[in-house]
Length: 102
Image (tube, rainbow, N blue to C red):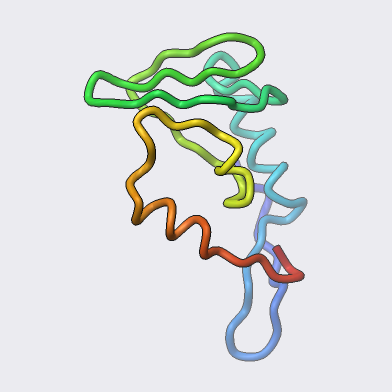
């Protein structure tokens, strides 16, 4: 499924990235799980609890047992969570800093 990994770093600690960027992984997963992954529809709200999750986007709502949220940390603040994310998660997300390679 993966096209391959590319070494982006130098020295003794290589930084690994997906050849072709993360969009490659997204497109491959979408090709396999087309009925479960919707691209190009920004999530506005995620309601979650013991009974599952409801994700709201401009195209409507989707209900599921679980949700994998794969967005940059800088975007998480644009999504309303009900209930709110635990403070330790919010703090961790707000402390992420991106460098030139991100």
